[in-house]
Image 1 (cartoon, chains in turn yellow, brown):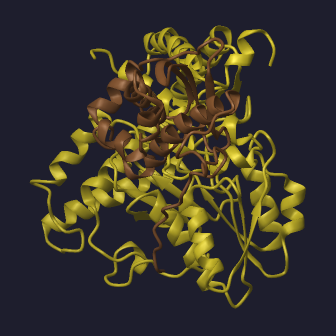
Image 2 (image 1 turned 180 degrees about the vertical axis):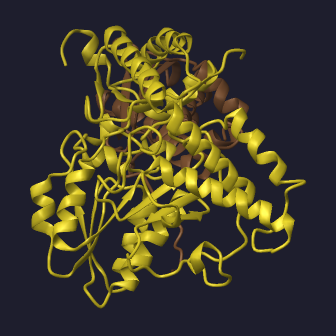
Length: 393
Length: 147
């Protein structure tokens, strides 16, 4: 296998060379503990401060509203548990959706076992929530609304500003998991009425193991890790300085490249969708046609199963992902594909291709050359395809 | 994640296709669970002269059906009936725990095709009396975690 094409940028992104270069000194010569007062500590602290400023700037926040975490899942956990327990004197009701990342869903399920009530909103066939349904779900006990910015599987972008507005009018705290949206959508936390927002560095060409939670000043939240005074006493533990520096650099680059990045991804996305539609029958696009992440192409290929599609693509060097049950170890296809109303047998044939900064037109051409052959081969093997060949369906 | 043998049978599956006027056809699984196997048999003088399969499913489902057809081709009906899912797993050089149900499907698809043959020819095959091709083959193995 010579050619390799990576189309799973929603899973993780390669780190940019510039990011690595900026991180490297903080492993070795600039190794100090930011809490130490001597020069070694001061230069590390300075680096953390700069990174915090850069992340804040990317989302229109104040520097002291950014709290570094070990990643997106930790940020989600902290936001939801921290808000729930700090505000339980005001109520015990949380509203979220059926298509959240498991870092949100499983926290909500955990809270349900501990005295909280959770409403999981339905979504329409595009993966969008209904704002009227959201309004009607609010009770006088609702303390938190947690709705993801953009979905990791199907790429659908929610009406975040309106959701934030609804929450604000009712005095409810609004958290959004923006792990997939960061760097791919313009975000201004003030304009969008966001109170808490989860972020991750490795989705924006930064390192793994570092993320952040934006917490609007004045929001009542419990500390996540008790101990030292790091992160304004809310998340103790010596800072992951190289990681934080890398996140800062990635955030800076994301801000500077935003327009070019979005246009590049959208152009390739449209080329890929159009090519697949032209070359392969019985396919459909999952998610919203316009309100979607610039790099997300999630489609269903009827009569075949996603894992065998992934294996076949891997053999020709193409890395992708699927919502099929067989890739998750459970018997059900992804909860997101179920929530948008796909029947099981259709959902099993889903394939997600996600495009990033290093994807080229040649990569897309290569996929458009390989994918139809693979789909055809698997369909020839499928008992579900027999009736279709004759023209009936 | 998969053995070389599984990848070999997934990449170059043996005996893919259909047999026209097959003597026995068996289909098990359902699209809801993500896998369907269909096996066609040509039987002469108690010997499985030819066998073909079609499978909708993951890599291990395709590999399991492929190797199962190889294992019963040229065998007697009784020998084919002795094909167990364990033998399929062993022949494949192992399957991940979550994929063992694919091998069970393969065993059941062979039995379902033999049952169809028996019913078409109004004969009884010893060992198939209690076989129910529609029985649920799936088992859940979720780990319980204390919180």
